[in-house]
Length: 298
View (cartoon, rainbow, N blue to C red):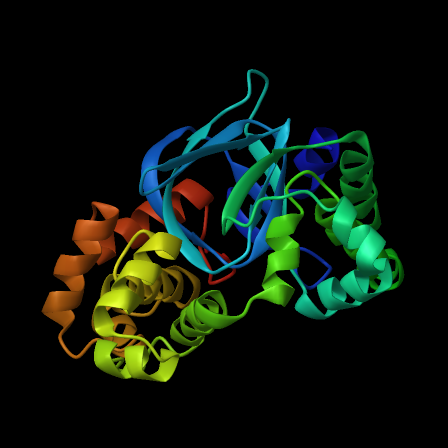
């Protein structure tokens, strides 16, 4: 797996592959805790290690443990190199239609065999079958034809392996959510996709059928932050991506993600990332060797 990624992931960052929903991950230097934001995905690591921090929760994903993230979630992460090279991994988007189909085919017997664990982010020991599927996925996405013909089936197998794994209950819970959990996931996805909108907490609470205090409580259980802090974090991550990918100036990036004040945007950006928008954009371009707008950063 590491050898295949060394050939394909030649530049640092999170980059698209030939197959939609599959990304290549590479980091050529160690990093301290920095803010990151992933969409729902499975991350399989070939070499190196990442340590994640979400509130009081700590988790490690490395060559022995894969990460499962079931909601779009901001958290902090540090990166460690391998002894013989950079951090290398692959990210696979969780396709709910594939997940639903697999769950229906597995039926009650398969459901009973699924592992427990409904946390929105989990690190699970990888087994030989899942590791083998990841290698075959990397092999097939070296060719456009193989990626188009074979890739979707291997992605389906990977989701199946995770679903049947020790913490497969986290994936299954996505399809069986009801009541409060379902409302929280709907709110998270709505805020993640409509981040330029102005959201009012009382309105969110009313739509979810709960009090403002109950919304804050359940929201913090899932994300480790308040609704408005979550929205702010989403906006800042999106703006950083726009400035790196599309070379947008600070004021335009701030406006594009829903900020009315560029100065407020700059203050909050520096508070989150530790650098001003201009310095952070330049830092990423230098670190990743970006001279055009081809970088994909989560």
